[in-house]
Image (cartoon, rainbow, N blue to C red; front, side, top):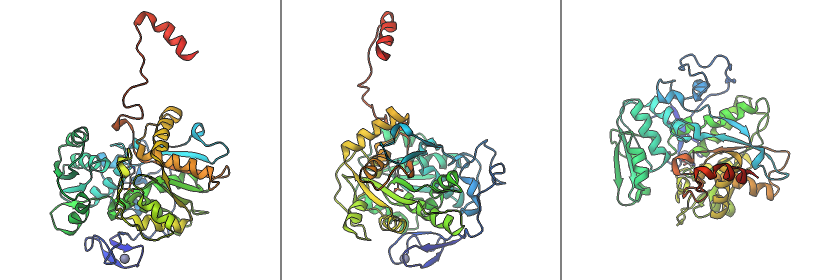
Length: 399
Ligand SMILES: *Cc1c(COP(=O)(O)O)cnc(C)c1O
Ligand SMILES: [Zn+2]
């Protein structure tokens, strides 16, 4: 698995020869899945470390890396369960894919695990969020140097979370968005695993493999996920194409993407009926992990939506925050607001009739909320009680 191809113009390159296609679009690995079948559940991939559970290495035969040992061996294999308590009335059945269960609390571990498994030497990333944390932790586990480039305004608490894994951590002044391209175009002696790099997309496709395998021999009607760079959306689309080629999908799930209305370049292009995403100005939003005004795989994400007959939804800030609380209080799942846009989008799609009671929808909850203080970050719901008053207070609380 050494060739990269462009989904748009079809050009191919040897892995390592190009970071992006000459046409400007991102590349992904060419994968032949014609002979692929769901692995035997009781017999996980030979080289995989015995973990007592399946991980993404279950799909090693369609990945451009071999199963490693250590932290990377533990990525993927996350829970998927139906959550009736948050389903919209007369709406679809909602199944939550909880990516917060990954080693560093987000789906980014899938891409990092495959990336680190494939490249030698120092690794790096341009991120101040989950991807930075993931690369720093996986590099630590693999005894590699890690170079993490964060934006100037990254909060100290975030820096401390990343710094504990001891990477080379740089707070960068200047135009942060350009760094993505700077690190791809120059030979820096560091393999940069940025948001939509082919290795990352290869790892991240496994979330859709897991979802589809859970529904096999049926298929979910739709997969809903938040979108920022478009890397994960690309991975999900790639998985659906591969599984279709392998004859394992009776029907192709529709891909719906969710964005925060305050920074929604992909949704705007979708509403315009455009196949090209234009950069937006973007306002600050609580959805920090999906605040990308100029997504490098935005056009590919749009193609995923149009090819699968899905859609893109913009979610208002208040609806997103309310949904973050709902997921914690009603479904027991702590997520970042960046993930709650996805179930908020399901609510909107149910209201408009696009999703209905006949549909099974898998929602990718991309990252854990526990890292970020959760929905009640200020602790405003906490009550005080003296020890002697506890029995009465308890009875009152549940009466
Ligand atoms: C990175 C991230 C996203 C966005 O993924 P892209 O691949 O950049 O589109 C969504 N949610 C969370 C929690 C993330 O960390
Ligand atoms: Zn191209």
